[in-house]
Length: 133
Image (cartoon, rainbow, N blue to C red; front, side, top):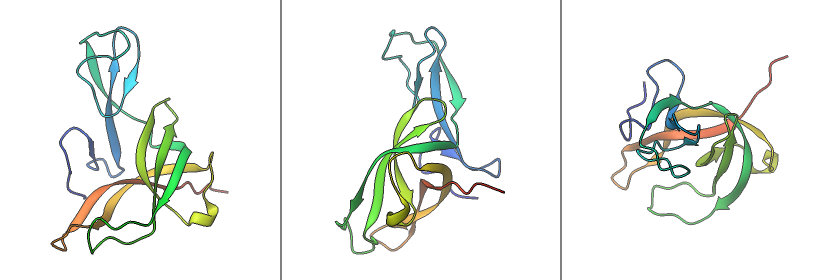
């Protein structure tokens, strides 16, 4: 099991990673991360939801800058449009030559790098969705 980076953001207790967001009970707007107030209708009546684990690449770029000496470069970051309509920023782990806008991806959790002290950095990311059959 992967350690949680921030409470109520994601966990992997079910055996599959899960991202938590919120849904406004008044207007149905969904958010990640969860919000206490809806930005659309300003309601405070929010419910915690588990977001889709699948989506498509909406936009991406390759990063060649190292924040610390333990970072592996290049790596890819971008926005993923989840099946339930939320667009969210995320790291995308797949061969750069196979990545394009519209590529199907699936949520994973694991080590996303190393902290400056060399300890593993747990987190979530998206990888290419492998279709069965």
